[in-house]
Length: 156
Image: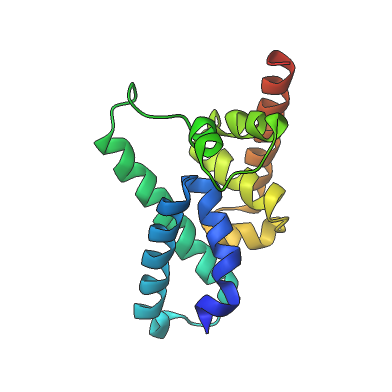
């Protein structure tokens, strides 16, 4: 039931973080397995979707950290290049540039921007997902937007 109701939404959130379709599928499967094993720990203090977001995002970030440990930075394909090479990506140059800009952001700004911009979540919800203050999130989002604007102005 959880997968049926929230799977697509969680897939796209994970996909924005890990980029590759195959990686997103693996991360999502791990996240839902973790959710299933921890379902008794869910206290109902937040929405189920908030709880799942938190699990999925943490799994995606853990995946990226492990991947970074395994790959040298010289041999690693950049997020936008990986996305553009993916057969499931049907975007245009502007979208590619946006992802290039996003990949330059520090992890906290990248995740905050993604949840706010792509998912249009309120800061209160993002705060519950990431376990951080709304003020910190607003600062992260503001800085992310400024850096993305700067990236576009320098790369036009």
